[in-house]
Length: 51
Image 1 (cartoon, rainbow, N blue to C red):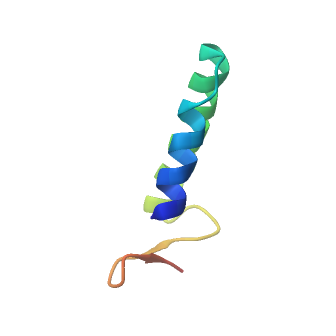
Image 2: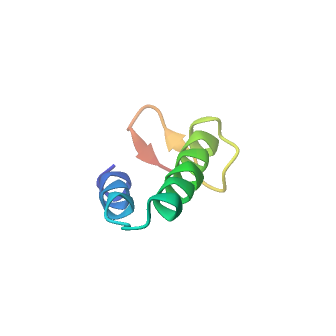
């Protein structure tokens, strides 16, 4: 979870608004894939961890 928050913080620091938006959308899509178990890693719902 910490990695997700830190990555989000890095995205907010991108000065170019267009680049920031594109990066945020790609990051969001990746997180959505994780939740939907379509990414190469998934959430372990019992432990709240990545597996």
